[in-house]
Image 1 (cartoon, one colour):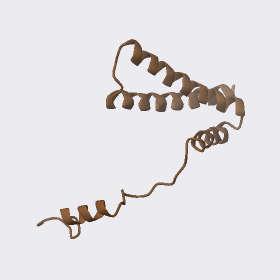
Image 2 (tube, rainbow, N blue to C red; image 1 turned 90 degrees about the horizontal axis):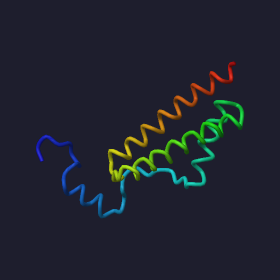
Image 3 (cartoon, rainbow, N blue to C red; image 1 turned 120 degrees about the horizontal axis):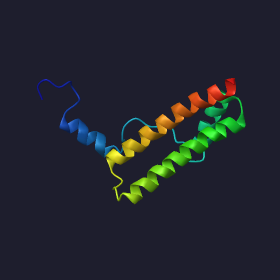
Image 4 (cartoon, rainbow, N blue to C red; image 1 turned 90 degrees about the vertical axis):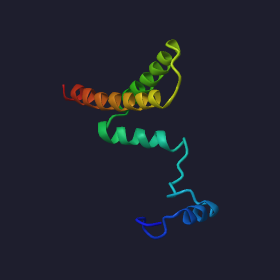
Length: 106
């Protein structure tokens, strides 16, 4: 195929698919490893267990509230609503960190 780099044609794609490889391998971390890791990051940030638990509780409440809102308004769980949930979690975490740091200073 003109214009494509060598080794990027359909023949190579078929060979890649037949080999069973699916791309870059990711480290296997199960659902039991991720939450303690997040808690560890928050604990390192705040240096108090109670403050880290408050930040995690705020995220859990925000996700639960978003789920209840989706059910109340009969909104399907599609790509845009999942994107909104991810943005909501990021916003809650960011604002929670800022708010809790200000509360610790006073």
